[in-house]
Image 1 (cartoon, rainbow, N blue to C red):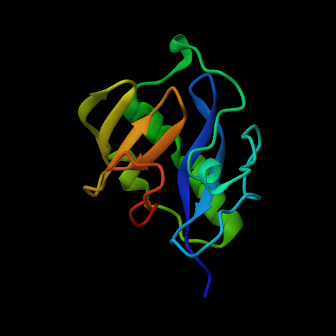
Image 2: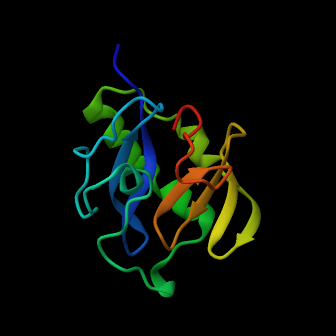
Length: 143
């Protein structure tokens, strides 16, 4: 059985458009996936790096999209990742129906996708985390 990979872990921003998406294997017993669609994203060197990869380029405050725009911008990269890995794509309405729940301060925001799943997004870092904000926690399905 093929494992489902999370797509919303790291992304490199080119202006406000995503150019890459890094995946992490889901589940505590699986190794991190280091060789997925990673153009411009630094390769993970440890489990901690795989959970919260760094951006290959530094985004400036002028180029950082808002939290909902950032989350929505991930759709194309995640669909590409799903197609190349044989995993089901995250449903488009999850991205299109995303709303801001609240500002968590420090560049973190709680966003609810179009089906009610809550995620913490950090647009300046190019990171999406589970609602707990804990980088080592497992992403909720279907992410």
